[in-house]
Amino acid sequence: MALNDPAGSSENPGLIHPRSLERWQEWQASRQRLRRAKHAIHRAITSRRRGAGSGAAGAGSAARGDAEPTGLVLHSRAGSAAHHRVLLGVDSASPTSRAALLTALPYLSAGVDVITPADVTLPELAGPDWERQEIREDLAPLTGRGIGAVMTLGQHLRAGRAVHAWALGADVPAAVVQHGALTPFAPPLPEQTTLLAWSEADGEFYRSGREDVAVRVVGSQMLWQAGHHGDEETPGTKLPAAGVDGEAPDRDAPAHEQRPVFLGQMHGAELPRRITARTAYEFCRREGALYRPHPAETDVLSRGAHRLMRRVGIEIQDPSAPLIGAGAPVVAMFSTGVLEAAVRGIPAFVTATHTPAWLREFWERYDMRRWGFTEPTPAPAVPADEPARVIAQALEGSGA
Image (cartoon, rainbow, N blue to C red; front, side, top):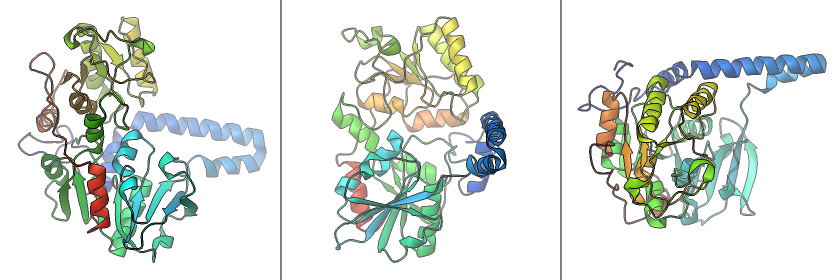
């Protein structure tokens, strides 16, 4: 498929790189050249300053330090001898990662091993039940522990990649759990993997015709929590309910009379900024909407776009403010937050100044409704049984 229309038509959806992690990494790097150049310059300046201040020893330390990744850590918890042990690879402490991978922990009676980068802190792994030790990339200490199933978010980050390489070599069943709405730019699944998908449509999309990937539909833990916890905060995507800089909205006003909130996505590699920034700018100006930056919109270009918005009168919502429950309409381009809002009963819509084929397919697959043309996005189906419980049963049973 050509990268200028990577998803092809909506009749033939799938990943841009369904098999090759290397090609996907090349694509991702090509979309992040400016950010990577900025970080390289920052590292070079930091290294020079350290070298000037500390002599030869300091320069050597700088040369070794900033570019090197942190090590891996093995967290272990004892469990019932009636089950094989379960191995999880967790690369991030983000709410979506924790909701997808760690909500199964209370339902697992099996012993559990969790591999994380050393700089990732997870509250679920704190306490006296967990032992902690540093481990090498080859995960050799896992051999002989009785591990019978592994689960990650994929192979595109260090812990997940190490876990899947070990599982493939040890002939241990492996699973990847879906943790967000899927675009064609998702990383390819590892070899010989079971995908724990939100829906059959997502499963077929992510599988992209591969025969070595099986699909099991378990539903979305994040959406399940949003549907069952109502206005309580859940580990999923946080939704707007506060006003500008945390000012409380008018909760008594009907939803259609409240100012919509546009969820920013300028940080994403899926679309160029000329589309993401222009869509946000034009929508907020036209509809008098609040703009809520994504937490990752901290780079130079995003901050510049925020300053421009303020200069023309667009109000920026504080992303750190409490966010639950106002009911004001939520609008985005392809954010999972649209689905979470719909589950909560909040009017949710999508919009874009330019709609490539893959984005049209995305809207169709999740039944997302366009702003100004239709009724709000209907709440997606939520399974009766909690996905975390279903996932735990799968891991303790057949492995994946």
